[in-house]
Amino acid sequence: MKIAATADIHGHLPEVPACDVFTISGDIFPKEMDKASCFQQVWFEKSFLPWIDTLLCDNIVMIGGNHDYYFQENNEMLLKMYNGERTTQYGKRLIYLCDTGICIDGVSFYGTPWVPKPTRNLAFFLEHDDLLEKFRQIPDHIDVLLTHASPCIERMGYVNDLDRDIGSVELLEALEERHIGFVLCGHIHSGNHDKVRWNGSTCYNLSYCDNHKNPAYPLVEINL
Image (cartoon, rainbow, N blue to C red):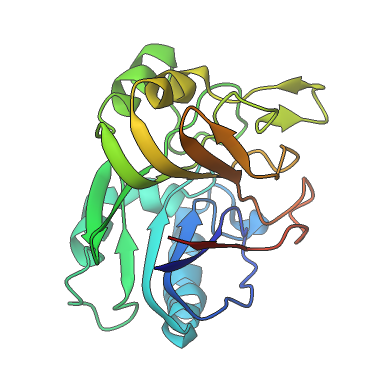
């Protein structure tokens, strides 16, 4: 299986190589639409879904992020519409995950969008104890895990402006107890973008944009 992966596109619609699965680990909407769910919906239906339909990918797997208010407000509807059963008019190859999983050609995917403090945008935001509980729902064995939060390892969650790592210790705890093949995260635009091998997992910070929401990092291609 060939996977192309990214996160934090913030309204940019990058060129995606032909692949079996394309993954997006949250924060898809343009920055000028922050906290404006109605405008995010229009952009999702008029720009994002038509773009999805042009991609040379068999499946597109996506989760939400802390800027994706439309996803949080319409979570249950989106889970029903984009569940891999190809029942929608547009975005038929789109699979939306939120504390849910799917198996594609024998490869297991699971997605969770939640992020910890501090964050300026509060979609999919949880306090420490609730975040621990959400991450405990991650199955013990997963081939590909999509998270919006970056784990607190190898400066993947390092924020230049704060001069410190705000990666999720809650996610790190969950990863320590599980067998995960690949961890595909984002959220922290200035975090370490190198491939990190940790505790048997291969981890990527996939944020596409820099702190100014401009494209800065390439998509990652993974061959399973």
